[in-house]
Image (tube, rainbow, N blue to C red):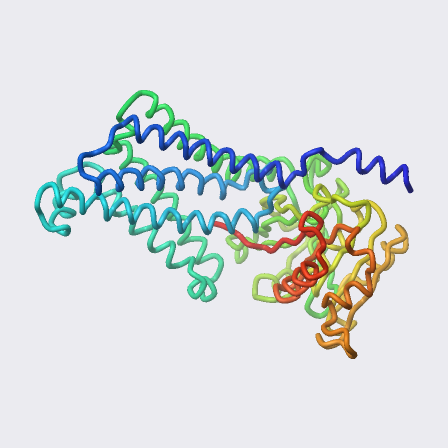
Length: 451
């Protein structure tokens, strides 16, 4: 056991993957903020302070739009290390940054020129739109960003189907293109020098190439290469179904236990629907399996799939994998159908493993027989936690800090992987914080998708 542990620890990189990815992104952002600031200074400031502020806000807004493209490009190197949920959170905050910087650009530029020409702000804006190339395109781009921002607000997002929200969000790319053409036409730093032109062209083309590679080229190439088809559909319970798929050269597909794909089943009534489902078994180079609960029309319709149905899969995505394991042993905590990536991880993870499986009753414990069989084969421990949320006695909620420490006394010495409903996941993460389990040992990922 000591030899295996030392070998596993020696195989881990000196710099943790998540830290390396974060450091790389922050270094990229810091370097570009500095470059934009230098280009702004070299271009010279206006005699009007408002115009100067407006130009600087516009340049930072353009940089934020390029960073936004990078965050949604779904580049495998970033996604495997940071996770789509973390990238999506940063995407959301970058979106707010874009909105406010572009609003500041519009307001300060208009007010500054109105002050110079001694006109009203509205009159000045109308004249600029009618006489200056690129202003109208910029206004349209800003309007699109406002619409996308409104559709992404929490109150609206909850009321929109994913496909509707995704369709609206795609107009962001049109806004980016319009903003870029506006910058080419009127951007003082863009036209100020050959160095500035080279910088902005490199930044925009690089961001666009990242999106094209991650969102178009790579998915198309992988699907043409692997040609997935449904080989079996198995009912696990009245409301849970597993779909088995096979294809060509699956040993070359860079998928790991704990990851998920965006699945499209190419039937006449489902081809346009993309749903995120985790792999419920570790990839073996011959087949893939997903297991889903009937939470909506899309997932409920999986049981009606026919053998031979072609599948278009985007991915694999997610950082919920063993590359982030930092300790010799692990604790896996699952709730409901969140057992699917946990069951896959149990095949792949190092060291001694404890699995806590939280369900309302034993009938809800899907995949339990094979989970127990797998645990027995590799010497893991599985505890099925059933019943109401409030545990009997003084120890509080089922997965509260006291109960968690009682069930796994050495929790501080383990990596903890958590997957389940949002409420349960938040409760477990809260318990781990109270128990002072280091953040570097805690791994949780939610299915948060950016357009």
